Image 1 (cartoon, one colour):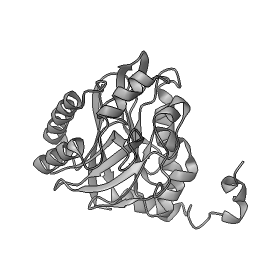
Image 2 (image 1 turned 30 degrees about the vertical axis):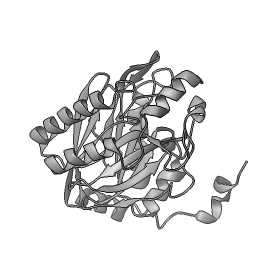
Image 3 (image 1 turned 90 degrees about the horizontal axis):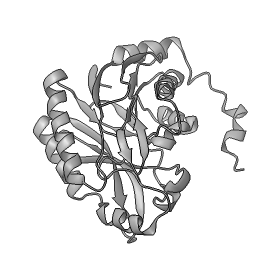
Image 4 (image 1 turned 135 degrees about the horizontal axis):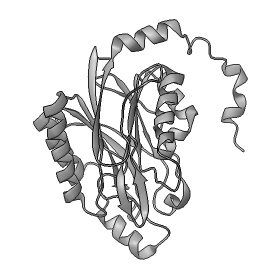
Length: 281
């Protein structure tokens, strides 16, 4: 991991089926973040290109599919240009059109490097509720981590992050920074739950964790924000409540190494006791 990594999590509204408007918001946020903190990594929420889905509805579903894009595509190209212009890494959620099967989608996150290159794609592996009518789960490479100049990064999309097994797998594959993208709605949980979960994921793996949730409303579903950044002992070093916000965190390599040296959680694991975790129901 780089000695110091400055992260910005952008808590923003996302316009439904309007990638151009959302890219304008993202451009403004990146410019503001670079000016305010000279950031290395800018994080955007889940499905930041075209917004959230609604209940099973084939007319809406057809429109939604038409607005999703393949990777690479216009959306990732635009993010690449922003990353190159501002010399930052970018992680953003997006609705991804399946590379070969028409009318089929992934709920994905892309990692863009500071020269505009696509460094990685994470496809959501755990699909909740009526998202099952829109997105297929990742079947391969769902637990991959990404080695970057900033450090080794694991990415989870919303429901993925409620499975400690996945985030621990990232840690065992070398992740130092966990980035969690969300469209967590108000009907699901109260805002502080996201602060708590961000803290726990960092604490249990002695890593940094970054949660970026959206705000606003799609189809009468409200999203509550409460983005957060936690250090390797689970302390929140930045947090938001509701409303538009950019939060910043300085991630320091020495703090991670010190905590892992005094709390040897990986050496002390007992995999021989955990067989039930991986048994199918």
